[in-house]
Length: 276
Length: 255
Image (cartoon, rainbow over all chains, first blue to last red; front, side, top):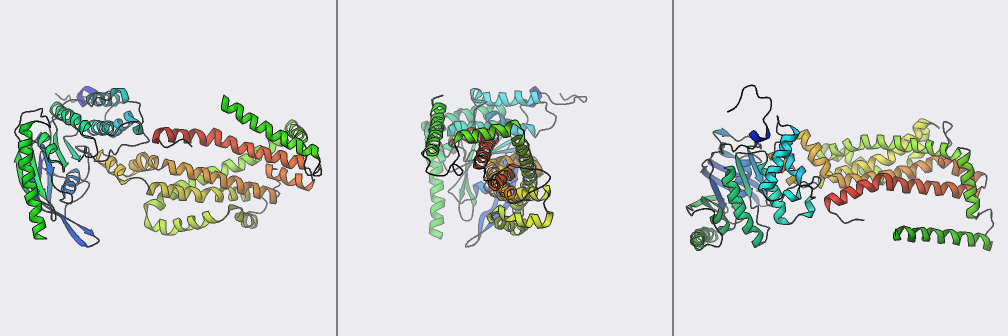
């Protein structure tokens, strides 16, 4: 498939669906120094994520789920334990694992197209034409072809997150890390994005780790839902969601799963209150 | 078009009031010349080349000093924002000196450099520099950390982050600092030119000064008008387009 004499990868090659990442997290702990001394954000957390799996991390705020996501991204380092992606320890951020943040971290000095190009310009061996083709492809995938030249402030919240998604997908990462990306959107926009995200996940075959505090959202999107408890952040339970896709957030089957997960979530946070 | 006409009308009325005051002879015509006398002076000075020469001398000092101020000020601002040690030292110095009216540099410049171009440049640079340092530092500090994190995950590294993320993100602050620096530099240069005769070139300030020496009020007012017009043009030609771009991109309200 790869020719030895190839000088640069073309847009078509760049757009190929590549093998997704596998993740192995072992005994990871992390504490932060706060105003009231040291806080244990994560306590000996272990988690495996298979290639192409969609895993949702749910828990109350302060359970360390975002911290864990940042460690997978390489933006933070664990105090102890290891985070390995495809067998190699994660030592820093890199375009193999791209992050989509809760606030759209889009750059206001670039237009929509410029934002999607940003990560592509950092990839070697692509011509200008290739980069533009790739950016166009992803803007089309998220349904924003018409807004290529728009400024960021002209977009709605949902459109901004679509651009963020296109920007994260464009460098063709093996893994997508999503930190409550839909939390600030209205319900209707969110529902559309659930459908689109499932479609794109299937089309591009990515491993996705998705952090949320919305249980229904987790049940709708995840193959597995991991329940965290706060202070110290620990994994309490996990649920496999084996409903057919694409899933509808309003379906009754989904509600059954969500209720079960919510129950678990509540019991673990109540234990927390009782202990405190 | 309607806005232009109204503005033109406004200035026409101002001229008429001026002419009326001149004709009322409340003050001596030596102190209040007529608009026509001022126009005549300007025309004469334009024709014999004094005006153009003086403008070129002044603008050369201003532009060269301003560019040096920017070139030195921007990196200093970045360093100040990046390292605590720079913030505590250069940052504090910049904050202090920015508060010093830049005309206060004139006596020092004269003693150090004598009546030379260097003294003029020095005054302009001191006027520009500290505003640019402070604005750049403030701008960088206001860049949301999430931009940096997002860039890191996309494979951006140290220098690339500084030039492609931090600097453009700080642009609105930097531009307002540049504008302030320009205003300070312009003011201090005029003060310097009025007080000090530099034999290497007669600037607009010097024309103003000699207008006073000769009690030639039409020259004083004429040069003041030229100075105002240059200020307006700098704004319209240089700063206004940049600000428009910032407003369009960032979506901040149009001033």
